[in-house]
Image (cartoon, rainbow, N blue to C red):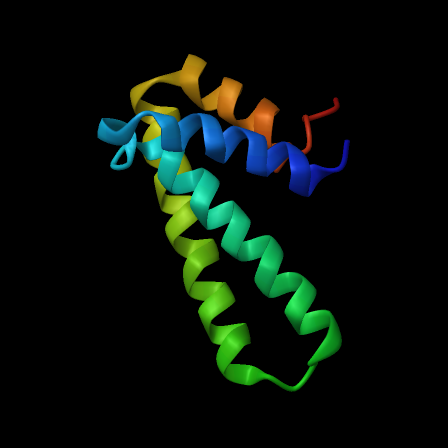
Length: 92
């Protein structure tokens, strides 16, 4: 099972709960889907600068949401990071 299929499963679970579309987790999952789509697009079209700008904007939004979630609820943050596999675990 690849990352994209795993993300689509998570987003389907999130979509089943209609009242949950405003949750931080749902927004981060949808931003992650957009980021992966734009990244694959930019691999083909390297000089598409407006898409690069859009990607940077979405990355910033996701970063701010993750920072908010890590401050408010560390357990939900760690679960989400583990599900999406978007951060490397710190090794010291």
